[in-house]
Length: 440
Image: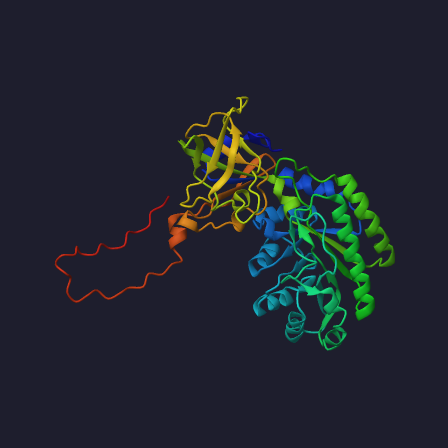
């Protein structure tokens, strides 16, 4: 298990020395605990799917798959990742509001459990490309609004899904389908929900919408995806969900639905909840300085790897849990603003964080960083590139993504040769050849 200074007994300082910084470290034991603690409490009619967008590293997806989770994907690369991670086609669903024809064809060729169609136009496009028997879910934008979500994904005007009211009037569109079978619905109300009653309310509302749409439009309920959106606590004055209270309420409404529809597969899709707690983002202090009475620690990684911690676009900037890795037992008696190396004032990992005295070379860890890390961040800003990622499993550290090198960053670019002027101006030095990239 991860503590402030070690992961499964391996000192974080040793991992930083071996793999360098900035570095993401994922603890497979924490990842497994997040899944199994929910799984053993949750109604057996509910299948848990891991939302790959939260952390699409194939080794993380493979851990989730080995535990029994299905995979929810939203791109061609995530679909390939699901296959690479060992997911059976019937344990994969594909969603997203702007699927390409190529993505739809790949879903059909892969024989996945269902394509989640987010507009009637997309449903018709899937029908044109399909052979008989293709399964599709309708993503519904419900008529009700969510409670407790930090980011609302439904119940308001959104690019996601089809408004419930419009679906009720779409019987002719469904009758026109020649190859696609609508077999259920999907709804996702919001994310980072820390209110147990809000999750139960959302679940009940989605199941009620499934009943109504099925009865009105005449399609069977073989699968209903109730979303999820379960949050984890990041900030002061937040607390993690009470799993017993949460599952007691969810199980009651799911149990009633399952009794009515015993053959229906109910899916709860979770990303942040499953992966968030397993990760630590480790950076090394380069400089410690004062500016107008405030202490700053300038580190080797920041917004380019961890946009979520920076909170760009949030109304309130609050700190993820941040720890000194080198100063065990020392008093946190000074407040520092922790920044990265980028040329923007937005590059702030934490403001006025209480830490023991920080010295250049010290390691600092941003905890609960297993979800929405580098893949949700501008990793190419200033061309620093992608950080290394390490998964600790069974007491052994595995490098699961190489750090980008200069060659990696420049290797896909193409320099267009421009003809040299016929005469070099005498007052201009001759142009130097472009320097060849060197390894970091």
